[in-house]
Length: 310
Image (tube, rainbow, N blue to C red):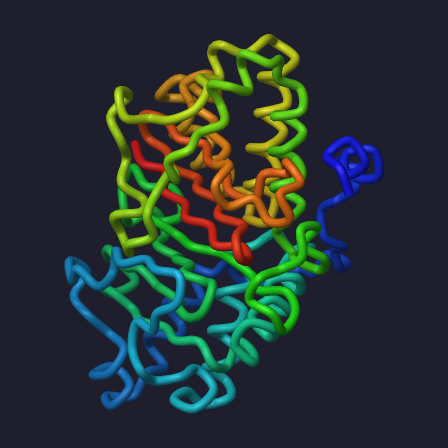
């Protein structure tokens, strides 16, 4: 399928994953973290709680376990239910089931992931969940100037093969790449030359992947060099990137971004060296700016690194 054919049959606006009916949360994720903390036995506290300034709190990676104890084996049923609700409460209610399905496909289910608690609710604290294709946080705004409480990671391998088909069927995050490719399609020839880069935007190396680069090292096309209509398309990309998350985290991310110039402060790059199917639909792309990295690596399947700071 050619790029023209792909774009002709792909409806970007309708490409986001199917969403379940909204659910009502009785408690916020933050209040449930406090309840969970109080429920821990001495044995559990010794295994999964740490000082707030422990460097393990800020780690992020594509596939790692913050502690060896699995949720489904180390916690009692009530605690598992709380952990599940803390986690799903970090997403919009209509996306939570999508994320749980992704964890099921990637690692056999939510129960095979791991959590750790840093600090103590009532003071500075952070809940971190880790595992394959997921690092997610809940900090009650304890970490100042950091969206999501710090760097996060999401991804998905849809299907049994590590190298997905060019159209990434059933990948729950591929809708974001479709939206990004709509921006590339709207660029003129000279803009595409600048936006399309040979050198990979980033190497995957734990926290180094989310380091904020100085302006001279940012790759791709400055959004400030785009037309008004093109910039609106970039804003739609940002909306799709933030679509899964609860509103308070979306608001914080956008506040931090706007404080440093908003979408016009970003560079957008597409990497031509890892194009699945050589179809000109770019699987690897990035938005980066003075306080943001959003690196979407869709080859061989989706890995995405996120860091938005003050």
